Every structure is written in C-alpha cells, then in structure tokens.
Image (cartoon, rainbow, N blue to C red; front, side, top):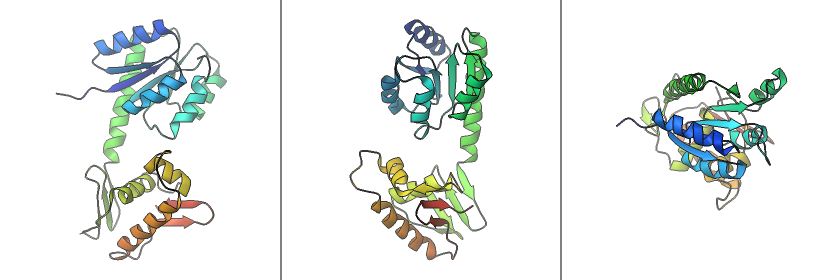
Length: 226
C-alpha cells in the first residue's frame, strides 16, 4: 500500500481546519490539526511532510511559530493568510516559509500547490539519499559510509553527526546546536560529548584518508568541508 503523505494544519479558525481536513482526507492525505502554536509543537512529533500554517493566530502568530520550528522541521511550510501586502509575503518567505496563499483561496489551487511542493520535496530527498565525492560515499538510507571502498564502522550518534554536517556542507554548527539536534533538548549530557564524538569520527576517517572532512571553526563549532 502506498504510504500516505502527512499534512499538519495550524489555524485557530475551527471551521477552516475542519473544511481543510475533510477535503485533504478525501484526497488521501493523513491530516493532523492544531488550533494554536502549543498544539502545533506537539503535533510535530508526527513528522508531517507538509505544514499549512495560518499567520493571523491569537497568541504566537504563524511567523513566530515558523521561526521557532524551522530549525527542527525541514518539510515545506505553506502560509495561509488574509494578508496580501508584498512585504508580508517577503516576511513569510524570509523566516522559512516555502509558499504563500491568501484567503479566500481556491481549493483546486491549494491542492495543486500542496502536490507540487510534495513532489519537489521527494525529488530533493532522493537526490540526498547518497553523497559522493572522489573517495567518500555516504548512503543516508542505509546509514553507511565508505572511504576508498572501505566500510567505516560508526555508532548511531557518530553517523547522525556526519549526516547533519554533510547534508549542510559549509554551514557552521556550534557544539550546543549539534547536541540539541542529535540528542534533543532534554538529552542527558552536555556539548562536550560532541567534541569526543568528533574526535572518534576523525580517528576512524584517518585510517583511510588524510583529508579532514570535519573542520573545526575555532570559537564557534564544526562544519563539513565541501
């Protein structure tokens, strides 16, 4: 059976969420709803493939919520709002939104945009399934890594650190941010754990290559060398 795409609708207008949920479920999507930012944060545990996010919510608005969740969520975020100014659209896109559709909107247009973003997301995921360089291959789906044809044995956390850095090559992550992303905010330990894991990764890489794939940015953190 084909796996259903999961969509999270965040809107404080119950009539809107009910209508969208009914229509999207008819289109064979798995739908979750939230009426405010707090509920939305809880529903993120379902790992949605796409989020429909209203901007004009009471309490934390959609712009602020998008900022809060974007570090943890990579799926497309489509803003739903009655605002129509160009600056509002720019603001929404600048904080991590992927699209912007104004109320009232055509259901056919919304469905078309959802479908287009999901297709684009699947293409991106398939492209990042593996990373190749002259001597190194990372297979993200199999969680395996090879250097010059040699399999490198890695712990789960070591691979997750490599995955985070390599899929964001060139971007600098401080140790605290890596710890939060891999272990979670409530994890037991501190950022010194990252330093030790990176040391072990480098030792394992050094058995097969002289190239340092994980660079230290002194006083900041680490980055994957492109």
